[in-house]
Amino acid sequence: GEDVEQSLFLSVREGDSSVINCTYTDSSSTYLYWYKQEPGAGLQLLTYIFSNMDMKQDQRLTVLLNKKDKHLSLRIADTQTGDSAIYFCADFTGGGNKLTFGTGTQLKVEL
Amino acid sequence: DAMVIQNPRYQVTQFGKPVTLSCSQTLNHNVMYWYQQKSSQAPKLLFHYYDKDFNNEADTPDNFQSRRPNTSFCFLDIRSPGLGDAAMYLCATSSEGSGYEQYFGPGTRLTVT
Image 1 (cartoon, rainbow over the protein chains, first blue to last red):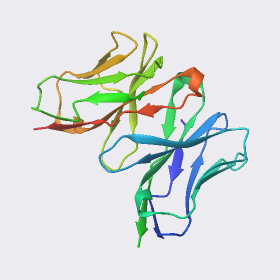
Image 2 (image 1 turned 45 degrees about the horizontal axis):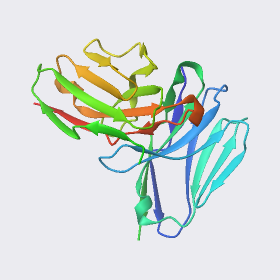
Image 3 (image 1 turned 60 degrees about the horizontal axis):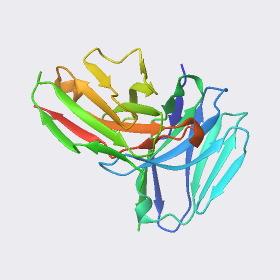
């Protein structure tokens, strides 16, 4: 079945850029998403990219998609302490109206 | 504001005692999902409704049931909760017209004693 992988932890200093990486296996993915989850809360949709795009920028967030390598990344510019959370990538293939989530990356922002 | 609401936010139940979790939405989305999320894990899809059509995941235990009486509401029933069912339960909605993005509620934290 579909597999979505992420590194478990990332630690950055406040003001630096963060890059969270994700790899997936299903070549028929149509949409790829980034969600943020703060402790004890639900998932907040941050941004998404359609599979025919290479890049999408939304304020401090930049999403890069390498469809050939099935690699997705989320860059957060000028990372703040409020960005500390778990970040999940997810992909949607259209069949079954389902998302497949990655394992989540815990981002820690240090002063 | 349009949103996904889950009640209660925290639920404590006893081993084997049936419990119902509630989700409502004001987004008028036609698809509603229930996920189970255990500590430090990704959300795991239990089932979803596409309009009135119920879609169960193959590995969802029979202990978990769901009801969707109308577009706005969806319930998760756990018939005989075990200690292993303690988790965060997340409800989400989506619509074809919104690009299939799923909007999540804040979750219900279930504790089984």
